[in-house]
Image (cartoon, rainbow, N blue to C red; front, side, top):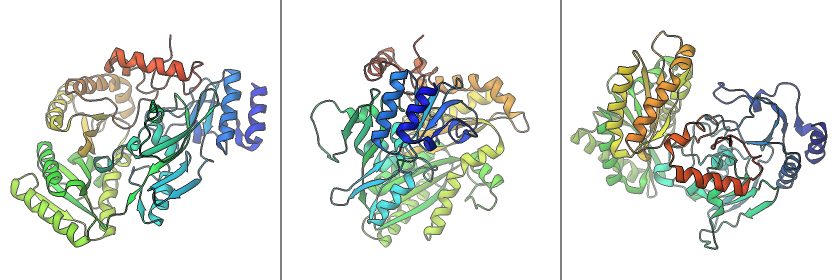
Length: 472
């Protein structure tokens, strides 16, 4: 292996091949539940260097684990414990290559942090709408490799819908150049969509051309207290009718999830936390004026109060208040972590079936596991819930995970199947769910996925045992 490390050092520079000291930034997953051991962490600075690294590792038969900001939640971007895998960190590849305002497009390298893309677009008077809690540290390459969702999917779609083209290094170390920025290009198979959402198992995304949009004239935020999940779905339908494309965000949060924020972050004022089973956060982006946006929002909320799908509501008066309301929503995962270890689920269910799913699954878990606490929140506007399970109050959270995680997952996933949903909405499969996927994906789909993997990565060196289990 020393020969390979010498080759890699010659490609990227000795300072960018790390195999000693504290490598936890690359070996420890974001949730701090899994830790691997890398043969080395390699940090290329260009697409040519990525291609040369892949060629060297392919020749040596050494697996590669592509990594961006290492903010993933399904253990898909860290090495396994064997010490035989090379972590390919793309953090040095963070340049904005071009912003084409006339084409409403921006081309950036894979290591570019999401927040940087948002800021560059804003400086040009434009909008890049992908928005996640981890936007200050997650990278565009990782966002695309996992087809990230976030809070504005309702209006703008997932990362897939925001991508015009990709530059990708294949498993053979060849460079696929596809950064044209075209909206129409029907010249054969859409290779771009193969790599988006593939979690680094088919190729390594090194750059992307992304869609930009005009900045709205005004963006307003409101918070509504709702009496039930069914009422939240009714409010969503009403908001869609009243606001149309102006409705850019619609988040639902259960009372227990909000109570954790109030408990662990008392400096945040959580609206109506003691008064209502659910809170809903709405965002209205208007291209006419703030006055027009506010009038539309207030009319919507008045109608919601009259129809009984909201019991109280408040519209943020300024940007600071709006940020505070969003900060409450984004603090739920942090509050959960403060409360203790928990079992996370990133599921999607048809919106019309979410109320029945929640009612039945809540009752099932309460019946099967005494004292279990449900932290239910997420992007109701696109049917994506983070349906998380906290250990009973005062219990040993670590023991709860050891003893109950498989059972809880099975109960929840079987309900997801019954209601026609998916066990992964926006976080991906990684290694955490690779063993579970065959139970919930059709054999035909799995067969086609394996055929694609075999065709594009016949050696199996790109992120092995992620998404698909390794062949026995």
